[in-house]
Length: 612
Image (tube, rainbow, N blue to C red):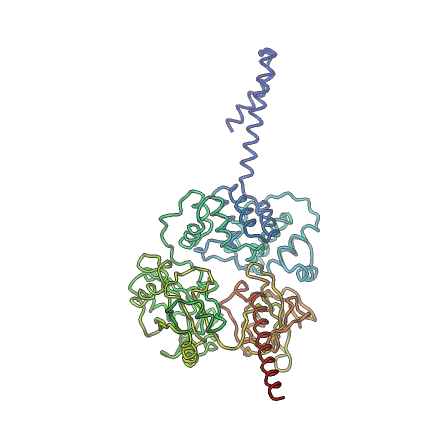
């Protein structure tokens, strides 16, 4: 402020009579130039205060293009204008995180709280909101529409710092009413665009065609770093926000691994057939059983243990019997593996493990009834060293020196093969051991977090399956007339587009107990009711695995396809709606089915011609 006072004093004296006319004009010009310069600096300072409105405007621009390079350029241009504190916040939010990955806090704000807060902030009744949500398909779009219709003449006031504070307070606040009141107070003074992206952020998905990898790319481009360096630093730090500020400062080297934040899992690609394996794999390849359990990543350091699921959630409390064996390991580690139900060395059906999934507490009786084992098959970190760039063969050699061959924590067994024709026999052996099929891996492959490449292939059961999200539920019939037992389900439009497209409806496959638990869950996560609650549109967060007879074209569903005779194989609590199959997977299944039918018809025609 002293600088401004000085300028004001000079300005006030610009017309002093002590100046000669020429001098007075010169001084006035000088004063005007200084004042103009000062206010330009002030404008620049205000621009650098990150507002939720400018964040939202950038998000809208990113959503408006399907081109990844354009998305990265738009995002980078915005991030470059921010202070370090706001850069940290914005990078996290664009990556879909409310907090850093190393921060275990959650807001626990679901659709019911958002709906109630929107209703209270705008005066629209829940009955008014439901049909709008169904039409728009997005809570953020709903918030923007109804706040715009209130015709409140509001100016943007919410900063990214205030957004961060709100999220922190929501995580600390207990009780639905208190959380609703807190969110209502902010929505009541939000512009349509501020409300749109605040709600999207709390819902956990911006839905603008932006993933964390693209945020890393934008950071790398705008601050002149390599994508490899940015992605690697983000993996070590577990915080895309800190990674962004380090990238700006050129401080991406000499970063120690921070344990106890989940690293993205490397994923396998389904193999079409044995020819596909032979074409993809090197001369020698590793083969191991594909276990029918849940993917798990164990972090161990100084007797502290944390186990994370594929959804990046901590699940240590669900498997307390694994803590002791992990604590006994001779060094700090990050292990990738599979939790399976087991009776000694024998692996039990996945249905046994389902009895323990979703439980907040696992009692002594259930621990005894359904024992589990962690089968380790990869090592990402050990003895202070990050190992993901080492060849798989070396990682497994080190893993074998750390993890025992038998017991509740044990290493997976593998074989080295050089002939894909031998996989048929290995597949049958794996199925006989109660496992899903086979994993085929290149011995020289590095570990690629979050990537699905062809260094790892999987051969599963012969029947076709899809992972889908439940979008609507309906009351059943007969003995299930009091349960929500009929599920409509959907696939994603694409890997980059999270729009859900319905593809079928299943009535069977789950136990009465599972249906009872899900009925209560669906009732508390209903977005819209029809027929006095007989049919409900629900939050699409429950993932199920379905099998079916075949895929056929259909005008009934938005996807353009329908599953014939679908049946629920199992719940997939280890997956989120981001992990479900896409429309492209469905199209490939149709192509395979059509090809099979063509071969069958050609063979029958040939046989009929020969008989004739």
